[in-house]
Length: 268
Image (cartoon, rainbow, N blue to C red; front, side, top):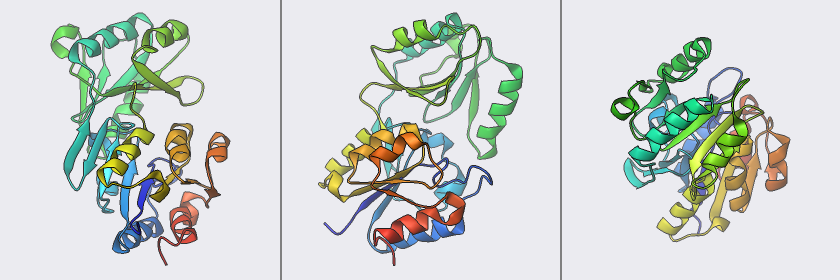
């Protein structure tokens, strides 16, 4: 199969962390790869509502969003895994009990619980980050039964006094969790990951991981980097991902994506 499937993380891969921009060399490389007949996909922990215009304008064939909970191809939703509304309400209540703040991600919005022990300064800094790219932001409050809507995954911020161990014991049956540093935890339904999203598309296109490339920079990229034949680390990345990569490219702002695709002859 000459057609390859190429998967890109967003933050620290497509998007430069320092300038918060996508280099023109990255846009050029992705468009050239598509012109050469390859299929390109964003593969991100972000849900589809949080894929901003800056990324959509590049022109991807599809999106694996929410760590494999949502899969889109040419504007069509092929796959969606959500958490039941009843369970979502229970989670919000439990997070209050465990003194953990979080934001909750779905196809339609990113939501914050206003009646948790939320740090108002943290809220004031986080909400604009989502709104800047046109992401719909909503708020949960009391009573839970009337304001909480179903979501697909959630991202927790632990603070002094948070009941970390009780929280992890609570989620271990139904969810997988990914650490982001010491006090940040991303929580996804079991059976979903960036790798399962790739597997779904391999089945859809009747191809294998041998024909897939994945590019990332952080620990939540490990499963997708490990799954494909060609795992590529960005020049600025967590050292923990390097054992799962066959190549390390340059930094984002040093034309890292362009350099990676050229290295594998996906572009000329």
